[in-house]
Length: 317
Image 1 (cartoon, rainbow, N blue to C red):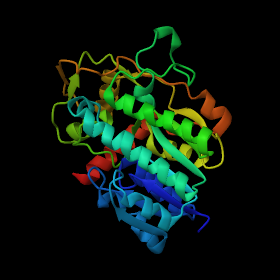
Image 2: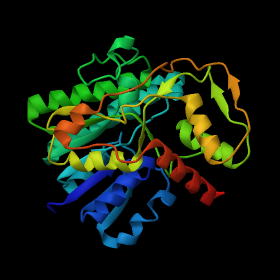
Image 3: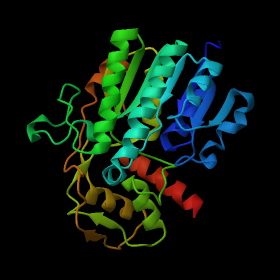
Image 4: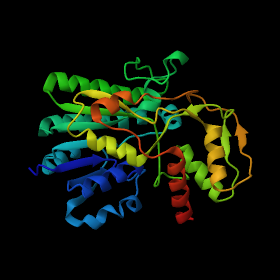
């Protein structure tokens, strides 16, 4: 066993590929396990320059092959980021959502237990975990009852329950990061999620942006490099706990659009369409616990992060 060997599931994705880069830069032996249904080889262009320190395994997480992969690598840590992450798709096909997010995650956890992995670090969903609590409770702390209102949120919550059970039953250690709305370069500007990248793609292409609902719905945006820093800090802190990884700032969708249009000096007005079923009205998470226990804090401001995303999209145009 190589002490610094790690597995990153979903490592070819938006957040996962940034994490892979950082792990390689820190001297880890990294194995990416990804079925490339969402992730891309383009996201790993920087990582492949590390040569033998990187291994890429094209595999989904639901099959029996996963155990053999984990046994062969015998990693010290598993970062579990792979997921079906589209709320609307979870509504349209809840069985597929559960297969990937529940059964796939349980396969990761069970494989980790059987191989003797030291810790599983899980990308939970802070944006869906807490549902729609009373306004007085914002920004939401980790003590708020978990009551997701979407199939996707339920599937992600179930994994937290499994992790807690496995720690109690088998002493498999874990840390779960309840991520707010992560944004940054490599997020697909043509995808179905990630409003920042979608707006950037539309504005750079001089297309009219679409806002679903009245635009006053709020989100808590946190930059991808700050999120990666939280994953690294979870290697040796926070055993058996859930941490919100967020900016603790509410930004409305219309405010977001206005800020991005201002960066590009665009006077184009957005188009407003009917709101989408299952989407939360407000989202804002307290990051105080992560600050106190992980020693983590967000460093990239929303304005700076938006500028980086826009420059990345321009570079792809």
